[in-house]
Length: 329
View 1 (cartoon, helix red, strand yellow):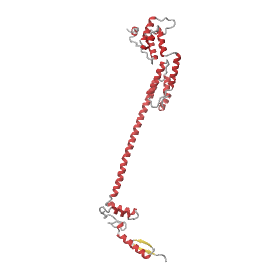
View 2 (cartoon, helix red, strand yellow):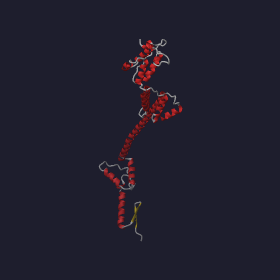
View 3 (spheres, helix red, strand yellow):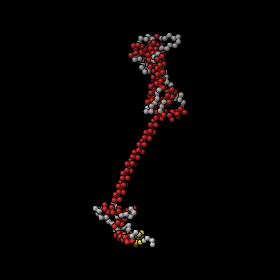
View 4 (cartoon, helix red, strand yellow):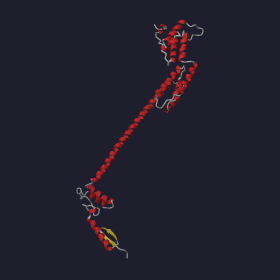
């Protein structure tokens, strides 16, 4: 039967298991061991009341409790101590250090704690883990970081994206009584909301960009097809459109028939065009272009003959008749 079970109080049916000491948990270990030995009535062997003689049997039992909760690498050194108080003090000196060394270590830890700053790329969970690690370090050095100090450090060193939340909490909550875990919960909830909003915004932007690209892709072929349709339509004007086309071309070019000549030259190797619907701009008759009008050619010949007979004179053509105006007498 182990020491922990043989010395168990009769009115307590539960077994109190001693924690194992490590290089990082001395502060926690010492608190648990003090509570266990006090529950068994053995703590007086380490810190006896004033004027009370330590019971030798209780001292041996407390020593056995300590031996079964320390690693084997330091068991040989602790076994050299004869009393329980000597064993306890030697462990405290080994893990906590002398008072001067302890103060120097605390100064280093405080500087490290003050230098903590949350980076933009980190999450609240990452930063809270760093602060929790500092709590353990301070505890191993015999110091305690209070919740008020931890909450203030957390709110003062988060990135600017949390500034609205921090300002709201400072105005509506009591910072001195807020637990550290509650402060972390507020920041994590706000961080999740920001992440969801960012994801929604990125999704909307991607959808708008995709729609814009799709619209641009569909517009370009439509323009090409429209241009091609106009080009083909211009080359295939026949029938009823040919009449308006012929008249419009004549007027747009100032009555010059060069455009019609070029068109006929380009079509000389093709099938003769149907001119039954073509109206001449000169004589208003159907069946020929203005460049082919015989009436116009005859009129031009008369004008030329009159100019040769009268010399320099001003000729006016009105309704097909030539009126000659000579120089004033």
